[in-house]
Length: 339
Image 1 (cartoon, rainbow, N blue to C red):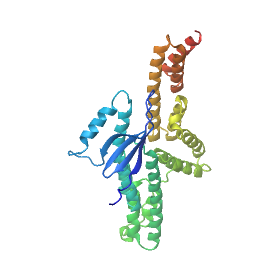
Image 2: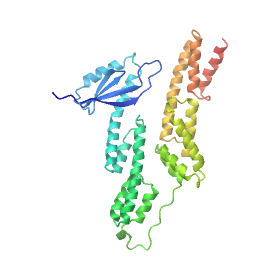
Image 3: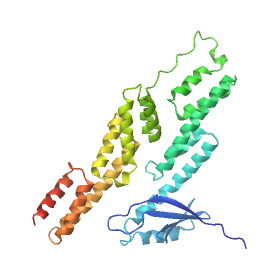
Image 4: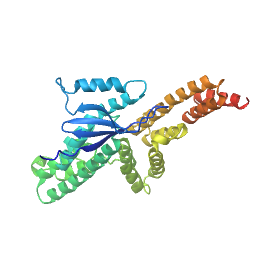
């Protein structure tokens, strides 16, 4: 009898439990045939088919488990399972993008990356693939230049068109297009078309930042800080943003506010970038937690003032000083200190 195929663990997401809960942060799935079995703390929680349809054979099991995990004794777990379901197609798009990149199909890889939902927890893997996509485009331009020099202009133009389908504003690709345009296309022209206008280096750095490519943005700013006035202060802003963003989940309200300010300074707009939107989401989470702490402190202020002070201190840590809830919590801390 053949040994069964080994189970392959896959990390799906990290989910912080609600205050007072005791569920672990990591949900781990085990692929068994065509199914995904979700665990938390060693206990099986739910069974999902990777390609469910109208005749889903595990629907009764899944419904039973949904009802069980939605019980009051397990707060927040249903939300975690919902997030796991959302990540299943994201994993599929991620794998497809990797395969397309290996085949040098840049446009197809970009389409798979764009299909990943903006609220995915896989943003680190997505950013890594975007950097690989950028590197593949740079490699493609170098190969196109080599083909053009060897007289293979049509092949060079096909490569450049692939790059421009993913990065339509790439200045170098457009210049190479003009350089290696097939001679037949130039017949009857008195002079070649003018090259596209030069794009400032800081603008390129900003675009990389808005694509969530912080290392790429910092590299461009570092290279241009000696000859473009905006690059030197911009590099300082990018480095500070990067330092804070790496600790996003542990930041307090003031640090999150600073991240939002840096996002606006770097992009030059009042509309948050993709990274800025994630910062705003984290700030909203802290604000919701602060409301829970305030209500708990308000309920305990007469019967258990020591516990109430602890709750109000949590409110001040999770809100900015100009927030109304922050000011109310500070007022109660002052009153309880005098008791």
